Image 1 (cartoon, rainbow, N blue to C red):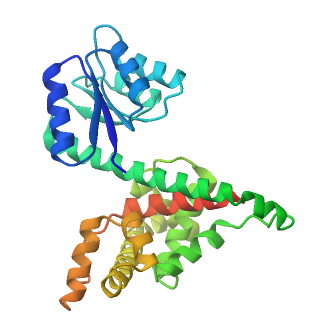
Image 2: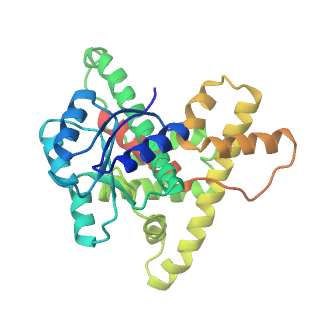
Image 3: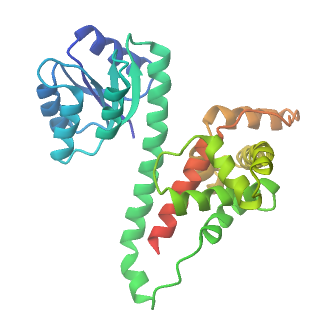
Amino acid sequence: MVLTYCIVDDDAVSRRMLQTIVENSELGEVVSTAGSGVEGTQMVLQTRPDVVLIDLLMPDQDGIETIVGLKREGYQGKYVMISQIENKDMIGKAYQAGVEFYIQKPINRVEVAAVLKKVCEQWKINQYLREIKDSLAKLDVFNREAGPPRKKPTVRETVQPILMDLGILGDAGSRDIVDIIEHLIHHSKVEALPPLRELYEAAARVHKSESLEVEREVKAVEQRIRRAIMAALAQVASIGLSDYGNPKFEHYAPLYFDFQDIRLKMKEIDEDRMQDKGKVNIKKFLQVLYLQTLDKMNEN
């Protein structure tokens, strides 16, 4: 499914530049554009895009007012704010209104493409989770007829089968990963993950109490998690190399890893030149695992 966009900006040149970046970078399709906040509200409600790229300052109705109005009308898409304003209070208000990403003007093609790729990743994750919920909702009647409700699984019981599928359940870093997911479930319950450093510290505090010990453990946690996720990447790439249509590969490869990392690892394995070091998107892996765990636990 192609991601759709509406661009709302009173500057026609900016609208054209953004549309060109979206389409040339193959990030989706621009289904509507608008030159004002009022017109933008009408176009968004009419075309219902997945993402709204919106300028902060517009003469008739600014971006924040427009977002608030759209939410009041029931629109639930994602917002990316684009503006030359650097005032932290204004930017803070934009995030409070529902903006997920902020792009600084003048428009930079590389920055816009990078931000929109992140938006696409989040959208795919949320779309995947919605599909899971829809599928489970259709089976809910059978679950009710099956007998009394089962005991709600713990975070550990939910995460471990996924880590087993990825071939890293016995890895030293898997304990740290479970600790991080438990921390997120019990203390955060938000879609956007905090910085990785905070997550590493949370895992370090589980087994260390003194501040100096925690500080030393943070680096060890980071290294263990990176090795574990790299091992999972190699495991999934090996499955794909043997059978591209394998259900595990089709499920885990696009969801937990960046496509270019999977492709590079498959090439390394195929050419028998395995490397200990490599690139892997740790934050994406943890965010997907967290969202899946949260979703699975809410099902029960």
